[in-house]
Figure 1 (cartoon, each protein chain N blue to C red):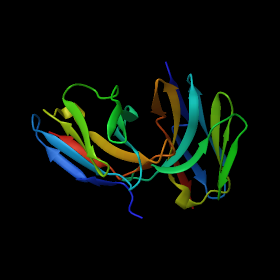
Figure 2 (figure 1 turned 90 degrees about the vertical axis):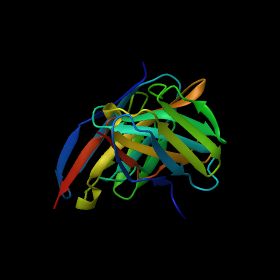
Figure 3 (figure 1 turned 180 degrees about the vertical axis):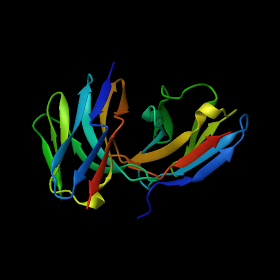
Figure 4 (figure 1 turned 135 degrees about the horizontal axis):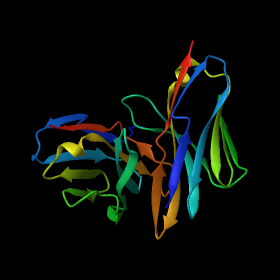
Length: 111
Length: 112
């Protein structure tokens, strides 16, 4: 069964304290891994797409990486405005496309 | 540019009533997705359309749920009859080709 697991469930960081969020997956027919940010009361906001192992994408303080079994979202010197829930999702194909989301990591950055 | 627009933002109704959620995708996008989000199960894909045609509805929980896309700029998700376990936040998303999805801000549905 295709599965996506994110860890940790919740993370509290001091401003400036770098860390990484993990998204591990067991799927067949991977056609992309996506990272989203979700603020309370809002829909998920797209951050990155990764397609193949070894690929990396960066945006401001965020960097996403991908291996054959997992993806990491590295947050360098976070600020309080980085506080949000970070979701990863995989797109798989088995006839039609399917999107499977992890349950997210709730990040709180303290000033 | 206007993003994905969903209405209503909040809906509270009694068990057994019909509920209709509405979505206007981003202009030019050819894929439209309906999701349900709960604390227990996270985001679950219910159904998606390509060029107004339903492609995969395997995530629709049961026959009480139905979705339509009569044209490229409008879609509905209907629950009839509604039950308390349907309470959740429902999101609509759209994408161009099979690229990243852009989400609306959701409809928070409470069935009493």
